[in-house]
Length: 180
Image 1 (cartoon, rainbow, N blue to C red):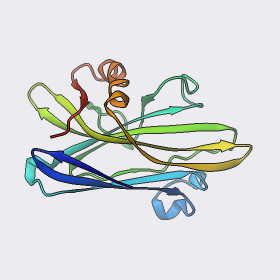
Image 2: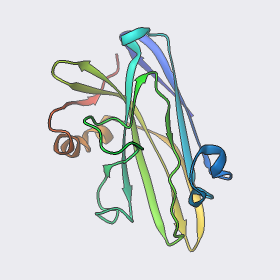
Image 3: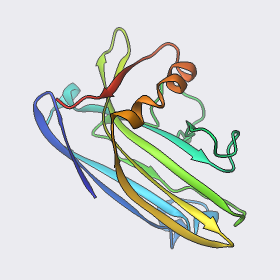
Image 4: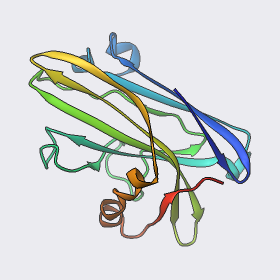
């Protein structure tokens, strides 16, 4: 799937691949990822230097999370532990990559909302979502199914604002998706 976007009047796009993890070792994922979905989203954007500093915020709703799938939660994408910002990945045109794993093959629904963002004001830490997509997987009676990527809208981002404000009170999050 390809998602076009525009930032600072420069066109860009995100190429998203969601597939089954057949060889988790090749992905740097644990063996328990086999049969589950993995996602990679790469950015094409001609903005240069600081103009291409972007970040990925990912939230997950899973029937094995604290709310048992009732609510989205911040995804612990950060392999280095807690960080003082909301981004799982941040840098110059960063790639989002995730390969969830589960040792159990009990029934499970796992859905991610992944948003490409930029910081509009560094002094006040104002984050604007540019565009987003959902993806995931399910396990039913031991059989796994990949949920393909689907474009998200402003309303999808806005439903996460309360959680983002609660989890990262030193940051501000703008309503809607920024389209220019």
